[in-house]
Image (cartoon, rainbow, N blue to C red):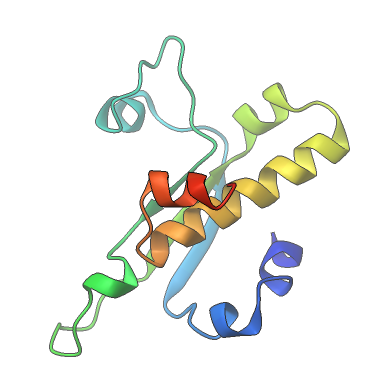
Length: 113
């Protein structure tokens, strides 16, 4: 993930403040349901939790860090080839960072992610 962050354009890297990126084994069933997914057949590679930059105000109280969680097991299961896995991790991290910058799924998809 560090490589993905290092390859972001500098103007984006410089705006990544108070953001934690973690890796967990897999999403909980509760999280999947909260996201409108069926735990029996759907999965999640990553999720952004926080307040996107465009929705913040300087008048807001200090915030806990925003969080991007990458889920290792679903990625490893669906992408056994190391090159494909690396590409998907890159896409997932970029997708979640785009949410941090306030983009919705349609906007992210329009960019090719």
